[in-house]
Length: 515
Image 1 (cartoon, rainbow, N blue to C red):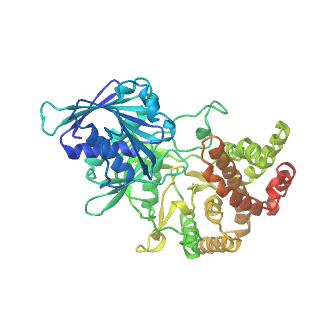
Image 2 (cartoon, one colour; image 1 turned 30 degrees about the vertical axis):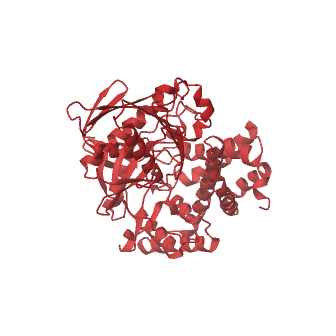
């Protein structure tokens, strides 16, 4: 793709040669999800089969995949890492009723479907998730050039904009010839692709479009605003540059499109802080504790530069944010996991107890709180030295909060079982590092705040994992719930949480039953 012009709801791309068509295939494959239908139209010889075959190979992660045109079989299925993909050629279909015989539209919402000659299907293909690509020969370059018109419904508007902007950014940044491989995402709306140049050099494409507002739930604000979750990629950029200025290994940003929410960032690799058996590597966790101690010894700014004339203001981890997070357990975990419906008076008592605890936390000096300082977001960089050996990612939701929060995130890792003995080692390592800089650092007071914020975090995550299952259809997070429940019980043993423990025992007794 070398040129792009927009009409109302349409992206027109000029494809100079076959290589440009293959890049378009990679761009489309990168954004496809189960339920999507890619409808390929155009005259014979316009390149429909070439584009469909290239998309299939991208989805399969196999550039040599045999993908013959299903002109005679009508439908061919492929089992790919992205799920089941159907490739249909309806050239020989005479009426839409014939689709019932071949079962093309059965379970189509669970599949990725590529359809050539989609007009033969009439209205049988679902419109809401349909991306139309109309191919034609470029009259100015008929031998190799093609014109592709891309259009889709409202659900495709942002995705097409991201695909086109991604290609523009990659080409401008010198990564246009890179292979794009989908990377495992997280529980958010962000997505990541590993970029690999022919030379073997790698980078990461971070796709973080502006967060759409959810329904207002309090004070006319959605949950994301109340909890101070990042609204756009500028928060990542500001925090990234702030961390790097302090000598920490946040990824270098190679290129950016702040409007669309795209970054090409340094690939820090895959070496984490856990071993092959998914057990914590104690030395690396302790390195994380000492890194936090070093971060917290600085007087840190609340405003960070992003671009010329644009700053990121780090929000405060205030009472409103802390409270709205704990209430997730009442809304999602209590009815769906604990099997209880709590009356308003019981919920009010829950809020009262937490309110007293929050007063204690908020009375302490605040610092940068990265918020998700745990194993999925920590990369081990063996060749670097000092605190730079620990790579940091996923810090865009950072707030100004109590320093104990991030250590609790590490010591009570949501994805990995951290033994109590290792947790104590982390507290000791952090305390020793803080005392070396501030001899009056009070580890007992810090441990009290650690227990409070550990309980707050466990309470929040229990609600989030239940919500991911019941609302978002992601049951895989439920496997982590027993661990989160264990951390919560561990925190509740601290004397500071005696009243909260009694509330849980009275109203969510299943939490304390033998598992």
